[in-house]
Image 1: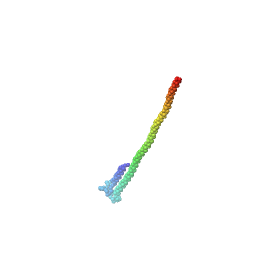
Image 2: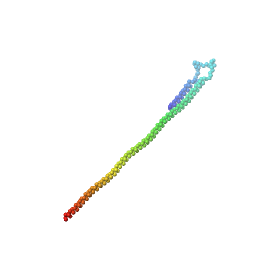
Image 3: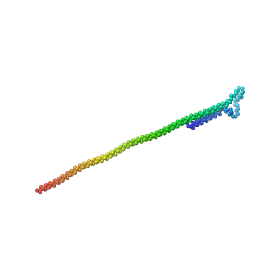
Image 4: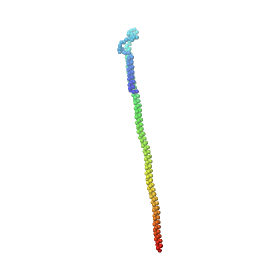
Length: 218
């Protein structure tokens, strides 16, 4: 309940109290010293004069005492109504304050809960991002290591193949050179043997010719 509503209820109560007091004041007869105009006896009844046979003497001003009692009652009622209205206003104000405080506390709790949730979500997102980044980095490192190992293995294999090819070429060249040298040596030996045989044959032929010529001259 809002403060404006509470004020409206209090104002309505005070107006009701004032109206009640006015109604009571108008309904009661005026006091003897406040009467105005000419007072005439009633048409249907006229009081006998004091001292007449069978008429008792008056006991005092009864209308004045009734009027005073009515005003006192009205004043007491107005005072009680005003006091009750003030008490009710305080109680209502406290109730409204408590209700507003509870409502505000609930709203503040919701706002704080949302703020905490947003803060926790941001913090968790940051932590998850770090964890995911580290996981991705480890995965990328492992993948890169595997790729690098393959590339290095291929490079080593190519280098080893080239080195082996060079060694094999040297070995083969040396083997071929030895084989060629042996073959050449054999060919040269044959050529030399043939040349020596021819030279020996020519030398022998010359000697034989000289021997034959000497024999013929005898």
